[in-house]
Image (cartoon, rainbow, N blue to C red):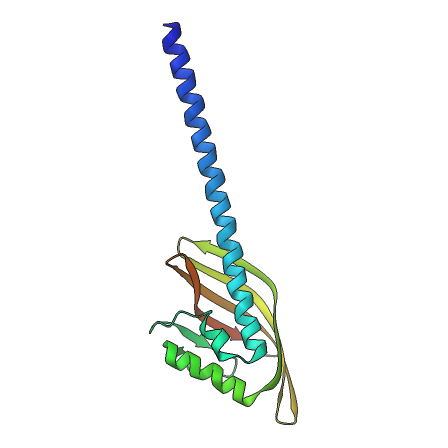
Length: 160
């Protein structure tokens, strides 16, 4: 009986240890995913600031379902070709782009993540200085261990 109690206690200790290590591993993975999403989000804003469509290519999924809504969009832009062309248009129409993500927060559910933030945008459009503050949502999907953007929406509040 004493040997059975020792075996049972040992089994409980080993099981508890494995369980705790599993939770630590899950938390480490979650933290790692948070860091990866925030890194891709920052890479998106760096590519935007640099006006570099090739850098931006690396942050986006090139799927037919990706989408974007810009502050000046009249419609939702759907599909990688259209989204890419929309950013190329921004880069052609604006120079000296300075954009940054302010107070970003990341949320992850499985293989889907979204970053909520404010954007501070300043650029030249011809001889006119443009300055906007917008609320933004950036969505990402994890595929083959890599997080890629699938949606970007920036909305400028209507003055009241």
